[in-house]
Image (cartoon, rainbow, N blue to C red; front, side, top):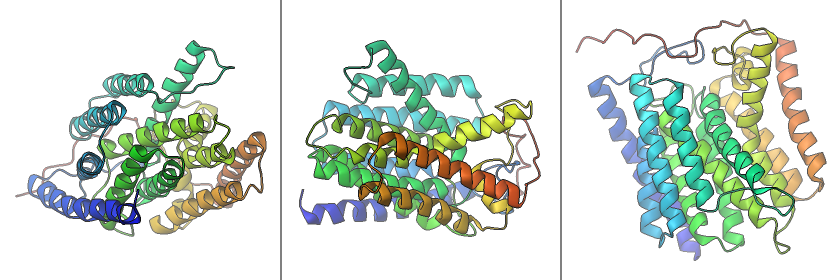
Length: 351
């Protein structure tokens, strides 16, 4: 791949998504499609949650324009189309968890059938299948849970997919490298309107679920590449870092809820980004704090300052827990529990 493509693909995607997001905002304002406030998402202004649509359109069109897509490439796009469809349906109508989980199970199986799976001589095929499906579904929901403040999900996605793009390029996986670069540019265009004190648009379920899915299958591909003797083994530690936060936060929040004898499906403000903002950090400061955590661990593993998988895993989990404990002890935020499903729609504004 030429340098012009490495720069041109994300630049094209950025411009396309930037303008696409602008028109999506205008359309949402005309139709009064606004995200509803709840205990996890508190914003005074009326903001649309249709941001995943221009991201997906940019990603799909850019991928088709710059690659000679293989069957696996088409499969990724079909899976993303299913996720954006069910996510949009949920954002607009609140369809409940059963339909969402069924769709997630279907797209996880699509990924598995087209080679995005855990493999290894020591893993039984049935166990590998279960771990693969479980990991993809966890990542989809973990990223959806993590999308709670301005810029966080998009910023994590941009950092992670940029690093995955470099890994794929270096290891000759050009189709995946181009798709990852296209997604980086799309997220940049979206973040133009999402990052900072006031967001003009949110990613919504229609965007966060695709992000979780792509990070999951990219990580699975890297883990498969790492089995080869020619690929640096530190790639596993790096890829673990890039997907760690959504899963660790999901398990951390569920553990806190269960310890308080609450349903794991009830919403509160115990996500790690809520702990940061409830301790006085702005959305941008909290997001940048977590970006720095991810990049710091990635740097440590890149330079092989820690080259043991077990030690890398302990460092990732231990540092995450340290952040949770520190910001919980410094100022224990008040917990307001509500039903997980979205509240009743807000009154329609006067046209």
